[in-house]
Length: 116
Image 1 (cartoon, rainbow, N blue to C red):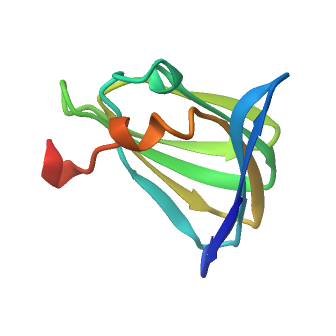
Image 2: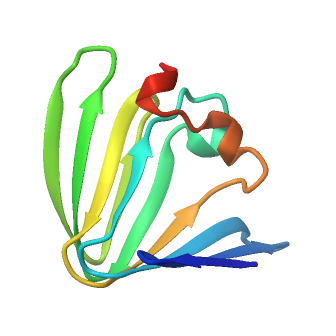
């Protein structure tokens, strides 16, 4: 399965050997995520992804402590996002990202700040 918009494309895979995952191709300047997880899904506790190529900026806020931060991501790098951490990813260059995710469970554990 594939979806695409102005930010780039997302390809969904579910294999017996490696499970469910997504590959994101993002264009420089694209902004994504803008959400948090409560840890309801094992695959979002923590959320894991690998920036395979390119560079991105990760903005985050801990919704329990209100602590904020920004991290520059330079591939290759593995990132873990823990529950109750709002996060936003901005593509500084075109990038490719691999996200490990349960495709069915992911949406049920994805929340936006207005839903807190």
